[in-house]
Image 1: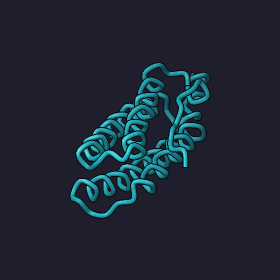
Image 2 (image 1 turned 180 degrees about the horizontal axis):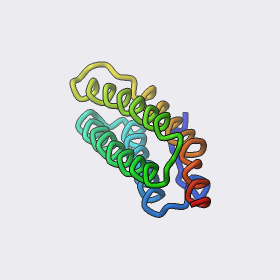
Image 3 (image 1 turned 135 degrees about the vertical axis):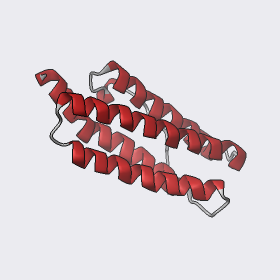
Image 4 (image 1 turned 90 degrees about the vertical axis):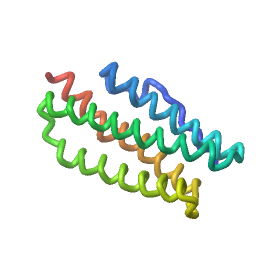
Length: 133
C-alpha cells in the first residue's frame, strides 16, 4: 500500500497559517511513512511519532482558536474529533515508544485517512466561514 500523502491546493482552506500547519502535518506524516517503508527502526520512528503528536496538539489549539474567533457553530463537534484523534494516535505512539506491539500500518492508515478526510470535509467549513466573515 502507498502511504504517501501529497500536499496540494485541494487541501488549502485559505488561511495561510492553518494551511502551513496542515502542510507541516503532511510532512511529519510522510517522514514516518518513509521511515516505516524503509524499514527504519524504533530509534527513528518513535521520535517522529512524538513530534507528530506534539505538532498535532499545537495545530489543533491554533485551529480551535481561529474557530472561536470566527464564531464557528460546529466547534464542539470539531473539538471532539480533534480529541478523538489525539487520544488514538497518542496511545499508539506511547505503546510504540514503550516497545509494545503496534502495527505501524494501522497507525499510518488512521492518520492518513483522518488527515485527508478531516481537512477536506470539516476544515473546509472554515473556508466558508472566513469567506462569509
